Image 1 (cartoon, rainbow, N blue to C red):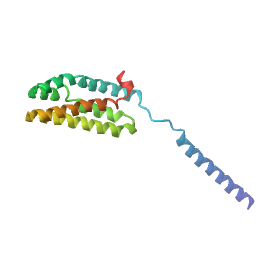
Image 2 (image 1 turned 90 degrees about the vertical axis):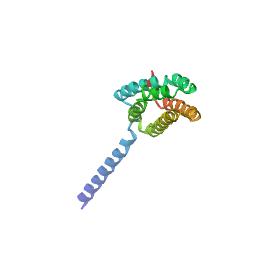
Image 3 (image 1 turned 135 degrees about the vertical axis):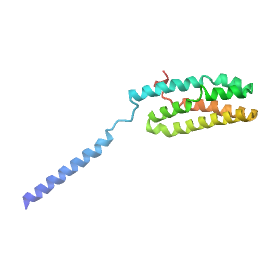
Image 4 (image 1 turned 135 degrees about the horizontal axis):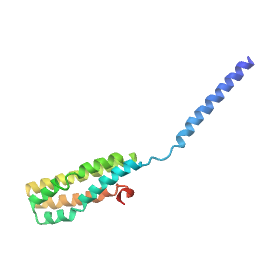
Length: 151
């Protein structure tokens, strides 16, 4: 009987040790980080995003001149891929940053769509408002790009 109690006590002790090791293992987990390969993809796409953002002064001139055709050409040409660039960046951000990045990317894409529609309809007031949305969208989204990707 005493032998059985010792075995039971040993079993309970082993079980407690195993459970405590499992519980402590989660606490030792390191914070999530962006791998070097993911950062390379973010850097490449951030460069393209920044190239589109640098075209904003040109877009502003077209909007102010109410140049409907070239405004749409710039949106559908050099700025067309910005949505794809943001998608690739968002997929590689830390999980905690993705929701905000997706929201900001959606706002920028909607601003570009509004700008395109205003130019198509030749609505000057709507065009000005949509340009402000686009410029704000670029500035807001640029904040979620990791600093390492911009250097």
